[in-house]
Length: 470
Image (cartoon, rainbow, N blue to C red):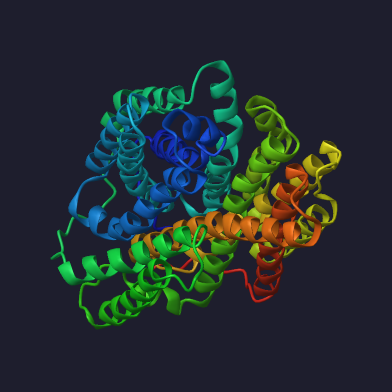
């Protein structure tokens, strides 16, 4: 028995949602390569500049939990049109920003659009395709989620070299405008519009919980944990998260139905997704920094050096997706996290101020082949165990945590990068900047290694789940 919803143009609908999500996720890391240019243009420090990425992730972490409400209040076409219009407005503001604060406001508005698009893509794709096609389609979804942030530095490097960082936003604005004109009118509604009562307390608790945790992680990049501006929002976030969780279990119509975590493979899959996104966002900020600051490559060359690994990810994701039903999540996730762990060990062994660049590129290729084997199988296996009526809740829960993972990856990478530099300077002095910068990046990769090992251990508990139909 198959429970998918029959729509007139499932492939077209999926394509519009995937392209819109890709543009939004590309926006997560697109400014990593442009950060030094923006810092020069607006005379801001790195710790201030990184809020262009962290602020984006912060809005996503706050907004994505609301998605399970939004799909019950608005039609699919209304949500897609609204998200695209908001993204276009945000990109326009950022493109013509006369100051850093206006640029940041534009970025935060853009993030609202992505925050609607990302969970919508998940729940709609799961609803409109029959089971026998789901593996292949979710392979492309996995590609969108990994390729967006991973290709951000490469594509933005090309744009910056041809013009200026402003054109990153012009490109995003034009692409979203095309989607709005061609795609939005053909979107069919797949939501069950019940207009549930909005629980204001849940809304506040969710915002404080995920906003507080992401803000604290971001601030950790520039201040110690003992500083009140780190531990106060973190403690408030954890407390709000506990209260939010308790409240959801007591409500008849919860904001997010957390019973999804009672399905063991959903819980395990979400943890593996968290680990993979943490790794992707860590690498997306560390490697451009290494290529530009240590090996002294230009933005365009640094971007092109990341292309082979991204190309392998693009090639492998559909292959993994199409063979998912035969091979299963258990084999893919174990093999994927093994490759990620091996790549992290190699990078820790080789990264220095004088490393031949081909060695770093080769290690990145191994890492991204591993990523292509973890994200889609973990994600699909997790969602497959849920009954269809819980897809929206599962999507909201999973995507919220993966955005927190992205923020955590960025924050932890920068924090360890700084700690590694200080450690190197204490031991060897600060005479050669390239050496202590390389020391910082080398040290930061221990976070990738530890996360890879944890992911590998957790993948041992995966069982191949069959979809539930209720």
